[in-house]
Length: 96
Image 1: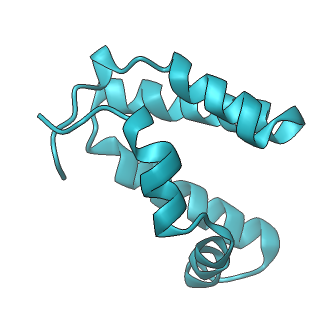
Image 2: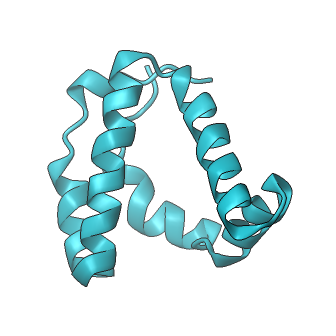
């Protein structure tokens, strides 16, 4: 995993983008989720993979799917690589 200084991460540009781009209740839920994930990353960035695995398993159980099916569904729904690069990647801190 590439080292990122999550303690210096300016979260406000991402909050603004989520409120403007996603908007409404979904935007606010994403902001809430990012706040929690950022808290984990600030404790220990290596924990992010464990949190991802735990959430995927919880979703798998609650939707009666396998973890792989959950990830594949999210992969199909996710933004394109191009949109990630053009719209979001600069809102996150660069690697150390």
